[in-house]
Length: 110
Image: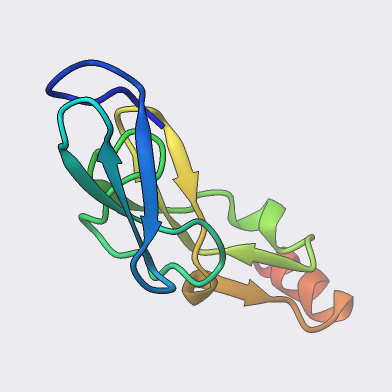
């Protein structure tokens, strides 16, 4: 967890509000911060806060199509934090390749 923005101390008390939200309260000044829980349950969207720094996420598309076709699965897009340069992958953009023959056929057509 990062230091409190008001008192600059790293002294937090955590409370789980529901399955998707955690509230952290600073023990020194009482400032409260809410953030999503870690795990696969989180639904990312453009503008969601980054888990590490809290900066807004943007959506980026993947660019390496020929390399992706050789894998069993790949992601067509991902969420990216420009401040701490962290990538977050969502199952919404996951593509599963069905067979190797189909992959070779797609690679030959490129």
